[in-house]
Image (cartoon, rainbow, N blue to C red; front, side, top):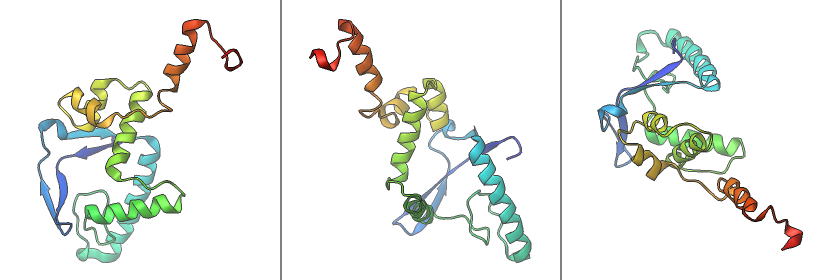
Length: 164
């Protein structure tokens, strides 16, 4: 976190919702360093300070796993544990519950709608091909399309609702 980045070096999946499987990323594009947005960096630095206290308290019993999100013992969370914590946080904040995978698509849609170039989106997603990112992760909804509707308004000189 010294360079305000996080390293993506492998993947962790669950087999049968019980066993964690660690393996290489699907492609070399999946191995990447990502810059951390300021609020995330602040939160992770606070979490790192807490982890240092826990490590000190546990001494040799603390496991140095190399992962960012870990139990107070240093052991990395499973996907299932992370999902449960995310859902609980959504509930506490009064947010609509969404699958984490769908949240990934929402984030890429947000970035695309805010002018982030396609090749940057693909790099962030860990894809070799921009088409993969655009096809599976950029999903504009009706509100995202509203700007296009306003553009259509100009086609006939800006007709108002009263004139229709």
